[in-house]
Structures are given as C-alpha cells and as structure tokens.
Length: 347
Ligand SMILES: NC(=O)c1ccc[n+]([C@@H]2O[C@H](COP(=O)([O-])OP(=O)(O)OC[C@H]3O[C@@H](n4cnc5c(N)ncnc54)[C@H](O)[C@@H]3O)[C@@H](O)[C@H]2O)c1
Image (cartoon, rainbow, N blue to C red; front, side):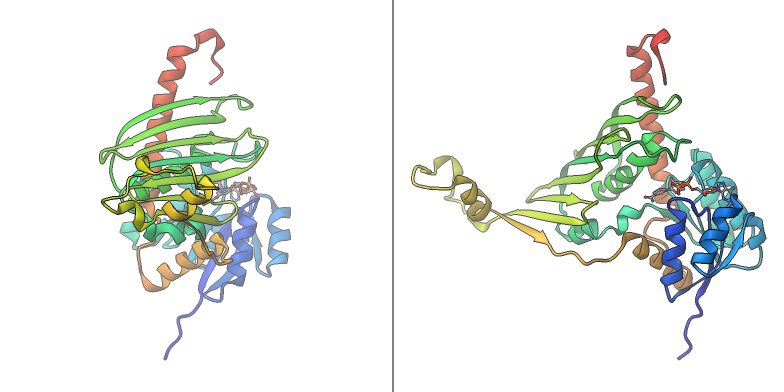
C-alpha cells in the first residue's frame, strides 16, 4: 500500500509561540519541517539550527518549496501573510485571532475556497483534552461561566484582551451553545495599555436561552483558564491550564417521583456535604491523557491536508469569533463613552 508522503511545511514567525510550532512539527512523522521564517535573522537561525531546517527572513522565499505553512506572526500581519500563501497555493494554519477585520477574514475564507486550500485557525483550546473529554456529557447547555486571566504578556500588544485572550472562550462558547447570539452586554477597560482594553467582562444571551458570562484579564497576578458549564442534567467543570475536567451528575435517586429533598430529615446525617456529593450528585474526575493540545492541533491540520477534509476550526469559525469580538468591543465602547467623561478617557 502506498504511504502518504509527509507534508512539506514551514513556520512563519518563530517568537514565543512559533518556536513551539517548529518543535512539534519537527516531531510529527506526517510533516517535514522545511524552514522557519522570522524577520529577525538571529531568531530564525537559532530556531532553524535547533530543529534542523532552513532559516529564512522573508516568507516569500517559500514560493514553490512548501505545501503548507503556519502563520505565527503578530496579528497585524496575519492577513498579508495568509493572503500571499493562498495566492501561492499553500495551505495555511493562521493563529488566533484570525485577522483584524471581518473583511480580511471573509477575504481569506474566499481565497482558500477558490484555491482549494485548507484554512485552519489556531483556536488551540478546541484540542485541549479537558474540553474534548466532556463534549459527550454536554447536553442542553443552560449557563456558562468562563474566566481567563493572566499577567501582562508584553507581547500581542497590537490587540486588546478581547481579541488576544477572550477570543478563545468566544470560540468555545459559540461551539457549545449551539445557537445564535441574541444579546451582548460588555464592559471593558484599559489599565496598562494606552490603546487597548486589558480587562473585559461580557454577558452573552443566546436565542435558545443559554447565557454565558465571560471574564478576561491580562493584568492578573495569577494565570487562570477555567470554564463551568451548567446543563439540564449535569455540571461540567473544566480547567484548561491543568488539563483537567470534572463531571457532576444527579444520581437516579433524585429523579424518583417520591423523593423530595425538601422533605428529607437530615438530623441524623453526619456529613451533609458527603451526602449531597455522593448520594444525590456523583462527581467524576475525567481521566485525561497527556496529549499536548498544540500537537493535536497541528496533527489535525496535516491530516486535513492529506485527506482533503474540513478542519474542526476552519475560517468560518475564526470569522464567527472575530465578528462576536467586534460586537463586544462596539458595545463596550458605547458603555465606556457613556460613563467616562471625554477628558478622563484612556481607551
Ligand atoms: N493559540 C494560542 O494560544 C496563542 C498563544 C500565543 C500567541 N498566539 C498568536 O500567535 C501569534 C504570535 O504571537 P507570539 O506571542 O508568538 O508573538 P511574538 O512577538 O513572540 O512572535 C512573533 C514573531 O514573528 C516575527 N515576525 C513579525 N513580523 C514578521 C514578518 N512579517 N515575517 C516574518 N516574521 C515576522 C517576529 O520577529 C517574532 O519573532 C499572534 O497572532 C498571537 O495572537 C496564539
């Protein structure tokens, strides 16, 4: 049986995240890391040496030499680089946020379609085993709470916390609410940044009644990436950073017609907490493998190229998250301008 040849690939931008793309691609048997590209020659050379590939300083030098590339440059360059890749028949994984504007995202989707190229967006949390492990337990989502906090990164300063950080949760929430957004309430404020918001608090209401409260901060003194999902008959607790998940489910006792928690005589139950979280509600810590989300994400990209399949997070999903982020920023800006006098505005 003929084996599929490895996909010839390059990483464009090998800073904080891109060097990890290079490491993972070098490890994947289905990929051949041909080159890394970085505008900073010293950085390109150092990473190329580490991962045994060519160092380039201009992505246009990739013409005719690779099947695919990952775009890991700052957001302001995503559109220009991805556009060039499609013009040159190269499949692209574009890091999140997909691009600055809705128009840029739409153009990239159209170009990828026209050129029959794969376009995947780097919403890496979709490949986090914590989220993957609870997908099947998630039925009739009623309420979602998400917190994503981190210290100031001193990178990604060309976007605010909504585009940089909250975008992960916007994509996840859109993928699990299974309904259109009906209402957006949002408050944002800058703290350290001059041009962008550093904290955002958002409440989304979906047409099916589901509600999501999402908080993001990039001036926190600790890192938190957590989500709680309340469904009709279960509660799912996810820790993306720890790659752990817990499923809370009602025991059959609670559904018995003659059982009423209000009528219980609890005077002779020693440990009420244990009673609730044992007899009435079962807590299961999901056993999660050691897989690295980035490896799963890049393996998926390569597989989509080899099999001609649609990626789980394609351009359309990237665009949906960008559209929602823009709406959040519009609503938050309106709120800010209404409540902060012009002479005190910093955003
Ligand atoms: N999916 C995630 O969880 C995640 C995490 C971090 C960053 N990102 C995204 O990855 C992208 C890069 O972020 P980062 O933190 O690695 O930034 P970074 O600043 O650390 O690295 C960017 C690199 O791109 C290089 N570069 C800039 N313009 C270039 C050009 N035109 N051609 C070639 N190289 C160029 C820079 O020299 C730098 O080395 C951003 O879009 C960011 O949002 C995603």
